[in-house]
Length: 376
Length: 253
Image 1: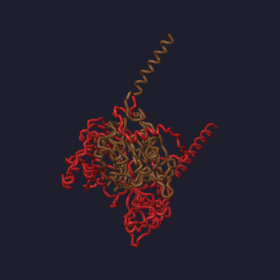
Image 2: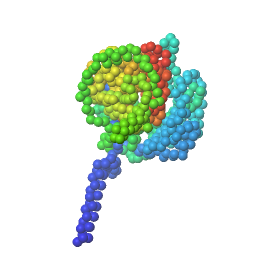
Image 3: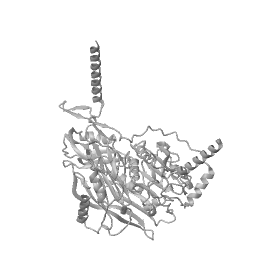
Image 4: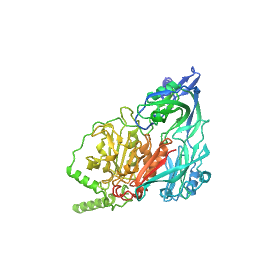
């Protein structure tokens, strides 16, 4: 009798577990969706909401120039993988950078804040930011002709190698360009534009020959007007091949533009656009977006009103395989606006404020390091 | 006996309080409180922007830092964002009670160099005009503008600098990201200057071709946020002497 009851309990427990597993497999991010008459099963892919850029507006009219666009029926999706961070290498890098500060480890990163500069490494992506305190110096000079392109690139490569700052899949090709510019005025009030630092940029290699757009993975090495390295800044992610997914048609993609389901650049309200260039690219999210997959996007380019060259990025995978989830930790609250009331005003305070605005120099006797610091 | 104990306790309390409240001589009107004020607009009728509210809300990461003393003075959104929050008090605005009454202010939403921020409330008009801003005379040190093209034209930007240390923004179009504020806060908390916290945030979040920009007085170019390093004195207003003001920008290519 006791045995039968025990068996019944166990059986019920097993059934419950199985039910939970079945239900959760239907609702979780990996719920399977059939494709090609159920020959292949594809998981749903989580992406972040599309970005918004520029002035408020979308096309009044958008057309596709008739060309023979040969596009594949399906495309490889990549998965974002965690960077294998090595604390010993980071310690060595800190020594090589001659930063005399404590290396702090948190859940998300390693960082050093020192008099000589700052350095931090993101544990998930491997992205880092190194800034020498010299970067704050505003020395101007003939910075662009100080070294030739080849010299800048070689120096940048040597720096990255010596400091263990080369990241996996970094392109060997460096591009030299002014990075930081300043406008100031001379004694006659004329504006002078000068270059503060030169950047040598190494991008990530294309994936199977396909460009990575969006926030492009890159490493930038910065030089000052003495030809010294004063910074190395990287934005990086690591990917591994996942699965092929079917693509939507070009007409479906254009419909998505019309429905504001695309990321548009250099487009103004009521522009007309003619698409004359289409390619498939991968779209990399901003750092911190906890991106899970790197998916193909149609990049459509063409001329908008006023001969502007616009760019439209449209997720190339059908919506049925995509689940859009907000960036973790940055979900907005419900809009509760509309209740603000004007607070009563003290006319004397206003008069004082007007007087202060006219004579803004304040008596600056503050102890500058202290403010904002909590007392022990 | 009881009275002795009472006085002893009062004395002890006062001594402890003197440790808790630092005796700092401050120039700003709000005494020892360092505060943030944020405003965001996202529900535009023709082209709503996803994420402006979340973007500026990320600055709460500074408020939540247990090692510092920042507070959030206000957070208005959508129709509660009014143009007079930015307009100079001399021009009938209310900046002295909002934007210029905090140490760090941020706006996120559509914007243009001219006229300025595009709002959804018509209280008193739909544009917060850059030409009507005079900031920094009361309290504001740093102004973060998560909006397009606000930092164009040296002399036009200069006019808003009335004791303000630095304004951060874009010299091009920009992309709103929900982690704009938290990225800025992250770098500021890691010892970066306000200027480089802004540039690092921009490099992490902006596609190629955008230009992140800062406009500042050279004496303030290395400012850290209060509690994270040194802050230089308020600069001479641009209207009195513009020689020390620099307009600086980087490309995110």
